[in-house]
Length: 402
Image 1: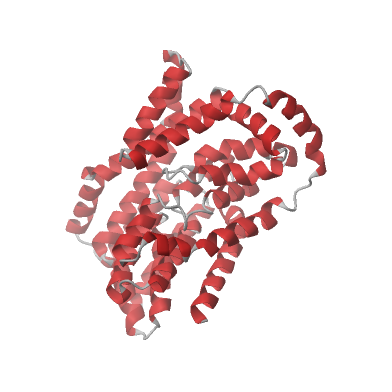
Image 2: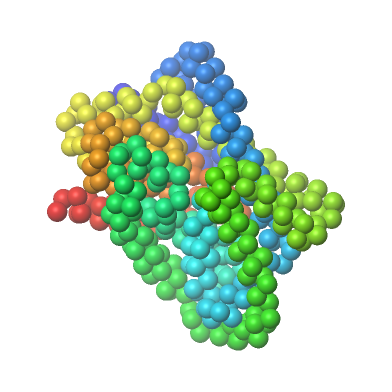
């Protein structure tokens, strides 16, 4: 039970500091320090975790990829492509309410680190006439971007979970389709349906006349996303290299001047964001070196807790601690494989519970960039998401019971 108290204390401090608007990087470093001091206060633990962070190619891959994501966001936002895309989309869909959900959901198909930054400007534009609060815009962007988290066949975390648990990815997706349905239907009724429909008619009428001649914006907006998808999936490029090719290509297409490129680099070098990333990665390294998650699993097993509850608890906790789908898969699914390899039901429990934990984690990168973009409040933004995740977890419990 002591290890459970350590985990709960760490999470409590992290959430408290987030509420007090501490920098995420500082918060995660404090959390890592707490785990280190309480679990393995030896220099070797700290040194190995530091080396893993510094010398791991994945660390630099992530940092560079996010930097380039910010570069592309700058290109799309400052070149008029975002506004042009919204005009064309209004002409096509004839509903800003539809765009509030559709834009982040469409961009959610792209498995990019911190990819919520792509859809944030689109949510901002579509939500202007509704006077949405920063918290609601953050919640809408975060929720709809992740409605495909359990069903997107190109998500590395889903493929990894399938491989570790020895379950076909097609079977895993089929058994989690209900999560996407609840996410879309629940998100629509919670966020979109209450918005008035009558105030958008004149704006859409004006946009229709403008949008018919501006379909090039659709290609300029979709082009980078499709190209990134093809490079990663079709040609097995890493996320950083694919984003580099996309950003350079966009700079050539847009004929960006050197002065504008320098400004773009300055914008992309967001010290708060990058420091937050480093804090998250170091926190994950400390968790791995101290073995605290494994200790939690042993405690739960010794208490005679049912397997399904144990797997769900480990995955949910791992999702909260790491804030990433690869993170909770790497921590929780070895237990899934060890306890019930090839069991689709157990794999579904682990993945759905892990995603729920990730969506509520203060270490979730998409939450980080969206909160920063909209200048929103942490708890107010997560409140409706927490309620919908409770519905999903209750549905999961019912399915496992019957």
